[in-house]
Length: 306
Image 1: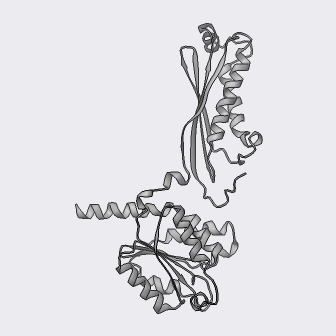
Image 2: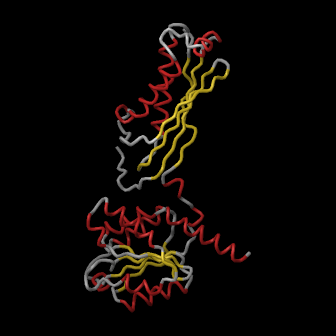
Image 3: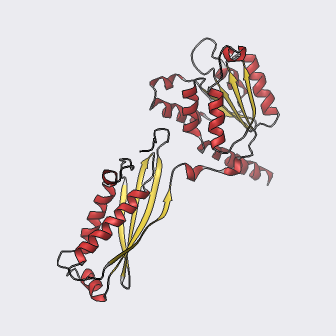
């Protein structure tokens, strides 16, 4: 099974269809009139399909067990074809495409089983996914690949050469996966004045996305939030609240991170943990969803110009 622990839970939907084709209108009439010997075809098949949706992970080895928050099965009769429509919703870390298709296939097989005594020419056709929604693909936006981005590592020991930077490089790797190119990558000591000076310099230079990593903990030398906070012109507390919630599900010490986020004029600044794991988890919690903020900001600037 694929590792989905780094993903966040979002509302995910999927719609799948299957087609059962019978050989005569007499079969359609028997279904509609509920005279099929094995019972009410539509209702029995619907019940079987719901069980199929719920039992998908029991039968498909790589499917994760997940909560089914909503499932609906409907039918459209088009001449000799019965079109089965299965819609499934969940709030989870992975989608429900297979659940919807599995449900559609079980509905179709149940219909086949119930109808074969009266119709030897039944066919099951075209089990397929119609649409899906939710997950990172819905929130990714390659339009922001040209964002002027900078990553600054705040660490006395790394700046001295005593240690190697892993967190900053991990952040850059995560950004690259979202098609963001890092134009500036620097290591500076964890000093109040240097951090402020670097934030002012880069925001004045037109940097749009500025990520500091390090100095967000509780040791005496951790001063990154104190340095950045007075410079912020518009605070966005929900960003780091989301990161801490994500981290807390994986490591109880995540609650000790004092990271902050907001705009310094037109530059979005975020302060990430200095540990590699903490930095990676913060990136997983926030990207690519955070990029939506630039679309909103562009709209706001466009409105002002008009």
